[in-house]
Each structure stands twice: as C-alpha cells, then as structure tokens.
Image (tube, rainbow, N blue to C red; front, side, top):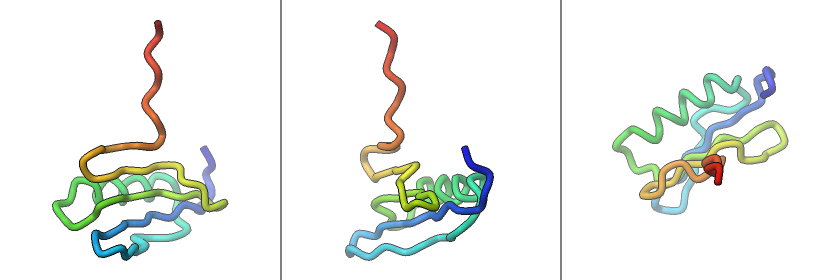
Length: 76
C-alpha cells in the first residue's frame, strides 16, 4: 500500500449525485471516512475510495456491503 496522500473518498446518493468526502488524503484517513460513511444512517447508496490513478481500491454498496475488494476464496 502506498504512503502518499493520494486517496479520495466518494459518496453516491440516491438522486444520482455523488460528492467527495475528502480528496488527496492518506489511506488511513480515507478508510476512516469510508467506514463512517457506511455505518451512518444517511442517504449513501455507495461509497468508494479511489487512488491517485482513479482506480477503485474499496467499494461498499447499500444492501450488499463491501463489494471490492472481493473476499478471499476459501481453500478447497
């Protein structure tokens, strides 16, 4: 994981809008904000954390929970 402050947290609302909770922060702050957004009883439908390359490194959706990264596969 990178230590640079290049992560952004986005919240998607039911009306089709999305807002940034914070941009260009370290991974610890980004994940703290994402966690707060997912446990709040607010209108968030989806929460993502993106890296400096605009790649999604974390995604949560209402009614499904964490959808990215996928859970580890169980050993057969």
